[in-house]
Length: 226
Length: 226
DNA sequence: ATGGCGTCTCTTGTATACAAAAAAGTTGAC
DNA sequence: GTCAACTTTTTTGTATACAAGAGACGCCAT
Image 1: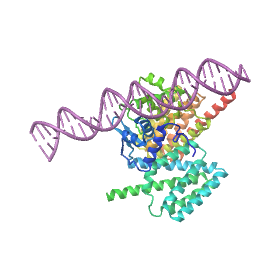
Image 2: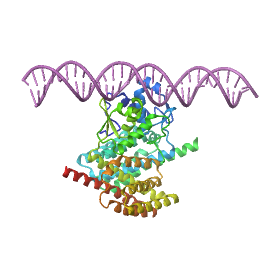
Image 3: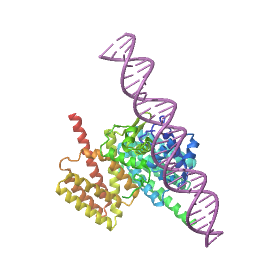
Image 4: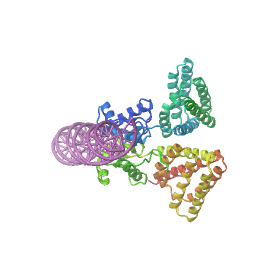
């Protein structure tokens, strides 16, 4: 994994290890949005004092995963629907940019990796296991990020993707999404391999925005039901 | 100032105040890239202990302004030329996206503010004071960020703009840049007011990329000279 | 002079101690 | 029973203390 700023070398610092662990627990939903993170409890759980834990929380706050309310404590960030939509809009643009750059810059190794990943997606889509397709899908997108030959863009995109993970999970097993997703992948790969930056950008942007739309539907149905 | 995550309410936390102060000193060049930041010295300077200062450094590290080398200390991030180019490329895309969204979404208040800001830029450009044009230019871009109606995008763009500030400063007083910059502003405003998202995006993207090109020239001449 | 080795100092990383603010719990009046 | 004011408890924010690693310095051998 090519690291930029987010996942530094852990070195001997507890703070970094704690940040990674907490981040994982937040994006996987172990800690729910709005949940309060008690310093002493967490410190005890990890077997450290509050000092390195607070440094970890400070980093998470800077990354926008938690909010620090002065004298009140740390809370897992709870995004409003509007804020989630904004992030998907941004994600769509970043993915589109990665696709456009990849179409212009990919080398032979990228071509091979992209084709192989597409076949992997095809296989997982056919198998029907939505969880393994999820992983294949993630790998597919990572390849495009890297092929864009802009490590900063790749890192920012990967980071936002991670931040959106909990919300994407909500609309995972929705209907025939896997089949349509794979069909979109095929068009994306065709555009990139053809060096058609404009089409690649549009296809990837749509590919992401559709997820946002599905999330909107999901929230709307929630509002109706609840 | 609409705040998202970067500039939180300082509350009663020294750490946040320190982070702001250190960030300002880094982007304004008081602390040079690669410079080591001694914890005790800084703590003494600000009249606090190392504890809140370390939390501030942790936040800056998460924001990519400093790197924390385990057991070695904190250093102001020193970007390679390649890394700077990557960030300008990203900046161009973000500005372009802001422009495209602004063209579609701006309301009457935004129109008025944009036109007023353009006139302000015209005035400062004519006066010839490159420093005051710099401020007018910054305000102009901020208006576009806001008009895009995506607070997350606006914040990310503003943040990257800040991070690039030291490098933009390098090529500030270069030739007739002010005049050409203002001419670009005029075309950008025309596109946005006309609701032409595509043109607005292209014009803004170019507007930023030209700065990157100038930086490239600057570095090239440095390499020749030194 | 130069390069390797041991010591010493300085700095970081973490734990602990303490002050102050917020939350929780209690008492009393109505 | 409800609400308000007071008291107690908990938790944050900061300072300080201490352990261990990194770098500086000196020494000696070549």
